[in-house]
Image 1 (cartoon, helix red, strand yellow):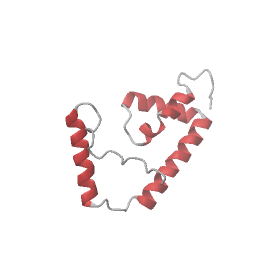
Image 2 (spheres, helix red, strand yellow):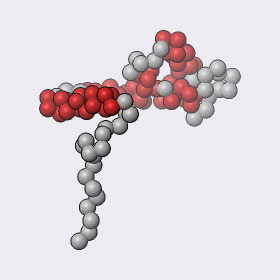
Image 3 (tube, one colour):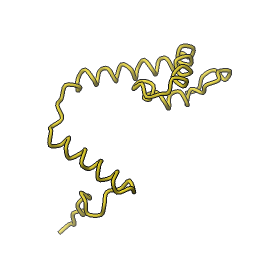
Image 4 (cartoon, one colour):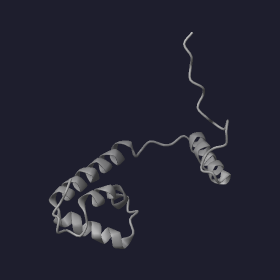
Amino acid sequence: MSGDPSRPTDCSEVLGHLYEYLDKEMPDVDSAKFQEHIEECRPCLAEYGLEESVKKLVKRCCGHDEVPADLRAKVLDRIDLIRGSGSGQAPAGGGAAPPAATAD
C-alpha cells in the first residue's frame, strides 16, 4: 500500500507499526506522527479502523477467559529460566520438542 509521495511518513512504515500504536507502546513523538499520517491518509485510516475493530472484537469475545494458574506459573518459570541463561534459549533437554515419530 502506498500513500501520497509528498507525505513525510511512508504508509508501509506506518502500517508496520500499527499494533505498536494500537497497543499504546509507541513513543509519544512517533505516536503523534502516526496519528497525523492516518488522519491525512485514507488507505491507512481504513486499515487502522479495520485493525482497531478486530482488536476490539477479539478483546470482547476472548478477553474473559481465565488463564489456568498452573499454566501461568509454568510460563513465568520458563521466562525466568530463559532470561537467566543469558542466551535467549532454553537449555538442552529443558522442554524441547519430542523427537519426530518414525513410521513402523
